[in-house]
Amino acid sequence: MPRTVHRTLFALWGVFWLLMIVISVEDHRDPAIRWWEPLLWEGSSCLLATAGLLLERRMAPRWRELLPEPRRWFARHLVWMPLVAAVFIGGVYALRHGVYALVGVTYRHAGWAYVVFYESSKIVLFSSLWVGVVFGLESFARWQHERERLLELERHLAETELAQLRAQLQPHFLFNALNTISSLMQVDMERADALLAQLADLLRASLQSGARQTTSLREEIELARRYAHIMQARFAERVSVAWDVAADAGDAEVPAMLLQPLLENAFKHGVEPSLTPVAIRISARRGDEQLRVTVHNSNGRFSPSRRAGIGLRNCRERLALLYGDAARLEVQQESDGVSATLVQPWRSVTS
Figure 1 (cartoon, rainbow, N blue to C red):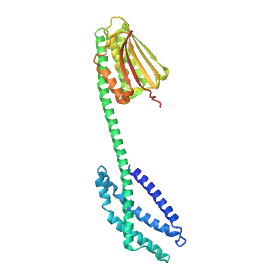
Figure 2: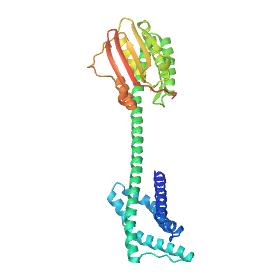
Figure 3: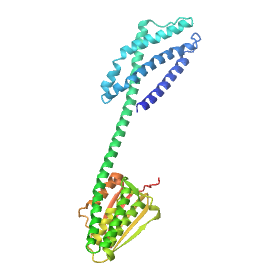
Figure 4: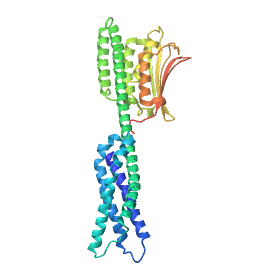
């Protein structure tokens, strides 16, 4: 940020003095005035003023902490005004007299009393203007820096909260899967062993995406298929799973492990309590710059007044952290069962 302030300030400074020199040359077209004299007058003032600005820039880091207190910041600058005026007037007029002497002429100007009064008044106005410009640039740079720090802090907090939510979600999923295998161990050890190997594959695949907060819908569907396969082995003839994922939806960016709890709920509330076959259908579509994913089961009852479980709460909280109000998760009762529908902004993992 300080470099940006320096570049902007010196760019304005250069434009200002260029205009001052051009105006001075235009205002002194008297034949009695040599062509180089206006350049010397404004050039000497520019030289001494630039030296003062460079000194102020060197001292700026010491004064930057006072920016939240403008009175103290301005006071710290303006307290040097008498010394600045004395050095400026002495230096400028010494330089002008020296150059005039080198070319063999005398530099004539008004009396010293008038010179001190006139130059001091000009210095006060000139310095106040540029001190105000410096304050504006420094304050804006500080505001930008603080804003970037705040955004970075918010991002870290969001990532931390997302990590905590996933830490809750994955043990929840793992417990349910192990419980499924445990129930099979009492009746069919070979099937339980096979499912345990499949669970290991599923966990390995989920860990590969564990470092990311988001993944592609294609990868998410693949993980969900592996989970569904484990659950289908448990419930045998009591459940069928259908996948209806549009070809152009696979590249969508979605929160990692988000479909898992939706599919778990379909098995827990739709399949487990049912004595008749249950059909689960997972569909995904892209439309109106949104991604819509639905997990529907043909059994179960949903009451809007029922408190959401840990899986749904995690899903909603993660969606809110990643997409704000632009995403939603709706669970509703339909004539042919219960559906959970995820709607979020369309983002492509390849973009």
